[in-house]
Image 1 (cartoon, rainbow, N blue to C red):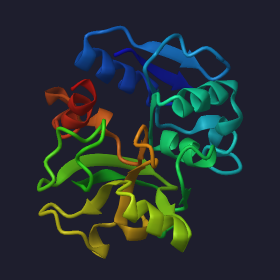
Image 2: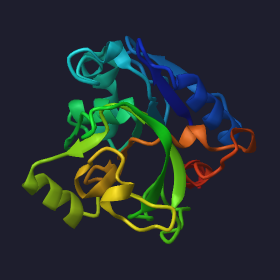
Image 3: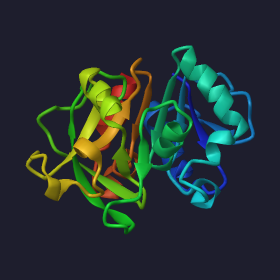
Image 4: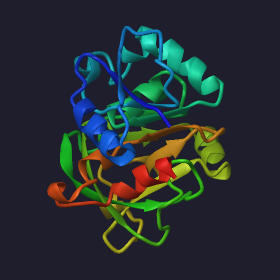
Length: 226
């Protein structure tokens, strides 16, 4: 499987993600510039974290207009895989590739810390190696991670088993105290109805190796390779 990572002006997690994918796959990872219209034959496109275009207007609202996004939409429409992490998740929601929106954190502060996630759907391309009974410790770093959608959209997301992760505590309990941003239904990550586009706010690329003092993110990337 050939991976590509999109780089927008303001991306700051692209190199972390490229390093992670390179180590996991032992393959060269394609760097896709935001003005590119050719995805260079990649099978799986990643949109990294950061502050694309300085987060002006809304996070991801300008990045969705980048030329590369049209190619990514066409790729996704054909069943190709796409994953957005943090700002990448915001961009996917802004572009309509994923439902809902990421609002300001309910406490109106930027959060940069470890949180815990509980896998909800372990049958997708990015979750098939995860343990549904485990609480995974994954870092967050965002000011707009509060997942929101209207009641009908939330209902459909839940019915269609599109929730990938919910915020939880270290013991796997899902409660308001373990929700770092006020996300509806404690949602930390979702997929589209076709299960080929994925988004999550926490950063698994920041916890994939021993030298990062945390390897809980490894199973997400191992799922993709598998």
